Amino acid sequence: MTRYLLIAVFVLIGAGRSISGQFDPDGIFLTWKDDPATTMVIDFHTQDDALREPVVDYRIYGEDPWNTASGDTRPFPYTDRIIHRVHLSNLEPASLYEFRFGDDSRIYRFRTMPADPSKGTVRFATGGDTRHRKDWMDRTNRVAMEYDLDFIAWGGDLAYADGMEERVYRWIEWFDSIKETLIDDDGRVVPIIAGIGNHEVRNHYYTRHEGYEQTDAWRKKLAPYYYTLFAFPGQPGYGTLDFGSYLSIILLDTDHSNPIDGIQTEWLHQALEKRKGVKHLFPIYHVTAFPSHRNYEAPFQRRIREHWVPLFEQYNIRVAFENHDHTYKRTHPIRDGKVSEDGVVYIGDGAWGVRTRDVHSVDETWYLKRAESARHAIIVTLHGNECDMVMVDEDGDVIDRFRYMLD
Image (cartoon, rainbow, N blue to C red; front, side, top):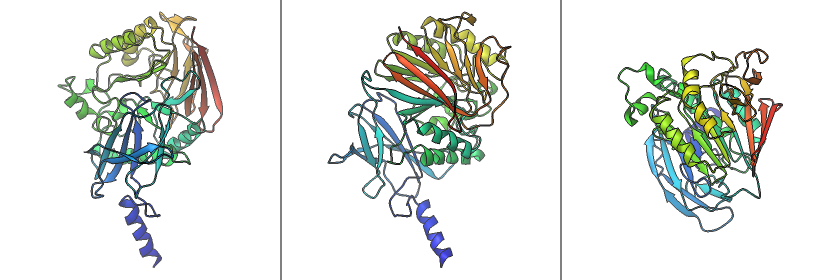
């Protein structure tokens, strides 16, 4: 009897039913494409035979009645899952919302961002290289969640599936980790901004594909999961998310599905020019310009320093977030190839949920201020002109701090 009861439970869960009988999606992922103060993109995953529509009910927490929004669907590559994607708009800034997937669903929550945070704070976590092992990803996720985050921004190398069909299980585990550890006890789902890294792409870099063209079709061919699973940045694989005039996140592609130079660099120049009045402006990308483990003279690193670093310096970027090396690092402020008080600080280097690597000697590496082998999350708190960062390892211990104040 016990055996058959367990089988029945597994069937219910596999069909998107919790043990309580409520509908619960196989995966859930929140992000933005537009104004984070007034919009939200909600993805939920079901099996293709679950007979669910891409519909979300939502309302400001505690209010009646429910509003309803519909969206569209797309197949989750190489699985029998369906991605349901619903865009909510005309929301109230700085408000707590609740949402559900029909009246038989568990109720979840999200927060919209403030239009003007002058009377409060905004806090997000950043890092990259998120999953060699699910338990490592879970561990850093839980540490980051202790800081009541508004959102997370990851700079690539997410599930380590390399665009390959036989590694799709890594994406399933990745979304399982999000559902299990990035939803708080009250059901609030933390939105995520996801950049592209070499492990999102078949063969890691576009240069390894004969006949490559800088088109939507080619990019999706190289990174079939990345361009299907995430609403932002979408094509062409880089983009900017603006939080009023107080914060902009710029996601970039370090030679994975787009060249660093040419069109992307021209776009970056225009994006920075357009945002000269934004208080806090953070480029986030995968490969490092100032590596803590890899070769400083490697071609990808040199190309970033040649094409992007001069723009960061021209537009007085205070901090750029890098990843890829599976370590923690913070550089001295750098301008014109040397340490300078008015330079850019580069912080990373992508060790959220992966095996760590040895670091260069800080004493013998001119640009390094701090470096160590540690899985970690970077917690960024913005309050007006002030930015405070605390770097915490997977045990919750503080391993570094950094702060700047705008003039």
